Image (cartoon, rainbow, N blue to C red):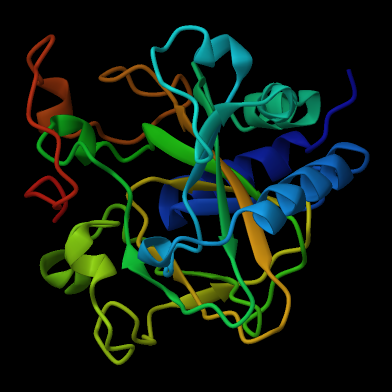
Length: 282
């Protein structure tokens, strides 16, 4: 099988994910699947206006693979339902191949796509990180253990609400770690002051404009947000979460030190989940 990335390019992308907290594979998702996802998601949002409580995220619609839906006891509703196109996205051969080339071992998809669409003239997305296991030594790994893979349905730029990130914040504590309300909580959703620290521009932040179909892979611990949409067109993102690597074992390619907290983690340790960063990020 012909490689998508050369061995050297794959290593460079993997190093970006480890060091910066994210990496981009340009143009990975192509037509016809990109066009079908665009039309499918547009139809959903044409029928379903954004709930005001999700105004900063843009929406919060969870679409399951039928195989995963069959294993749950969820009741179907307008914001949670199965669709075969999600299976096609998660199993998309170029995506599977490029993740293997990057050395993302033992990947396991949640088998749910989250549709996040910022409507025309929608507000910014607050700074946040999505990791929920900060009480566990898993939070101390230099490599990712939970990642999102996502695609925008249109080209993004600052004017229509492109992603912005603070590189390195998946492994290095900054002031925001200690002052942000929990991500997506009622407390942060209730903030009305766009001058609040959760929305502010920062010298350590960078914009991440993307083309439709570019794959972005990011560590769940990475601090990120998005600019407001200042255009008259919606800006839609399709995102899927995955587990990666088998904690506490490091990746087969890892040559750096392994933190003591990881090496000495008791088997089957159970802790309360929290989005509040702990002492495992220094």
